[in-house]
Image (cartoon, rainbow, N blue to C red; front, top):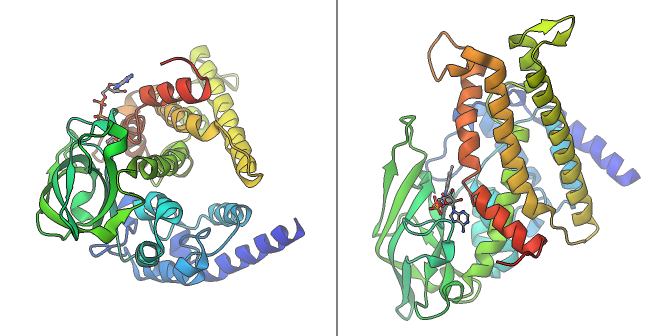
Length: 394
Ligand SMILES: Cc1cc2nc3c(=O)[nH]c(=O)nc-3n(C[C@H](O)[C@H](O)[C@H](O)COP(=O)(O)OP(=O)(O)OC[C@H]3O[C@@H](n4cnc5c(N)ncnc54)[C@H](O)[C@@H]3O)c2cc1C
């Protein structure tokens, strides 16, 4: 315990000495650094901050040092995250490689794959995207059809993936492919790492109602993938896929805690926008919703704390399964509440008549719905909880 307090002190001192002042401000999404061949730093300070964190091993604090990580224990990792939050230090880099593929490779990758890909992620050299969903396979992911045929020294990949976030800006894609069309559906799937520059890969951006384009459809037309890019055993990719989804869902369960946007906070927003009588919020329904929201956030915070303690104690816990559902639904509830509080000020999407925080809050409301779909919809999470936690019949 004393050691951890000492560690906290050292972390605080290091961050104070090394995190430039400009990197201790809220970060608009366009200033995030995602690495890879097309990655750009928003400023020289952002570059310096990334390089210092990388050299310290704190880009991936809990990964082993031999792969460029910091070798920290979960408790130390938590302290680092808390101290960064307290000093408002920006995250030096973002990415699916760091959050999802890296942890899965640590568990399932061979030594060569770990050396090659984990280092590239930590060094900001490779940006990854996720090739799971297909036009006919979303919730029923195991029905996927994108196929990889064994051609001796390589696989030949044909098919397409959809909703591939930022595929057109990524260097690599981790992909689920069908390698045995005759096996039961979960048993004929493999997990491949594919270089987006390989001949035969193309991406088509999908334009959204906002005019922006977060996603692509990704096409594979006779793409040759070296055998060494298979992660885990042939036809056993479903296990890798599920392990990776656990990391994705954990990340998404904490989605509201760390928004890059200047989203309003319900209690403060109520003081600014709602009517008060004798120091009390006038609308009783709004009072009820605010109290309900506060209680839910308290419960979620405590459950995160419990999950962490269970992990440190090496205990199995059902909480991670439940928290993606609870966290993303709570974020949606918060966004709805904010819009109710803001009234007509919650109608702005762009334009000078609305403040940046008002626009960010409305945009975050739209995103909160997307988050209950990405990484497995709320309905599917409830099915999984019913089956795996409550042991209900199919
Ligand atoms: C913001 C965002 C980012 C994403 N990024 C990626 C990415 O990078 N890579 C990637 O591979 N995918 C990505 N996705 C896709 C995502 O994984 C799928 O959208 C999701 O799994 C749902 O699949 P679907 O869209 O095909 O919907 P469907 O599976 O067609 O579902 C349609 C509706 O039916 C419901 N439903 C389906 N089956 C059942 C059932 N058995 N019981 C009850 N209800 C059911 C669903 O809950 C949903 O409401 C992203 C999605 C979003 C929103």
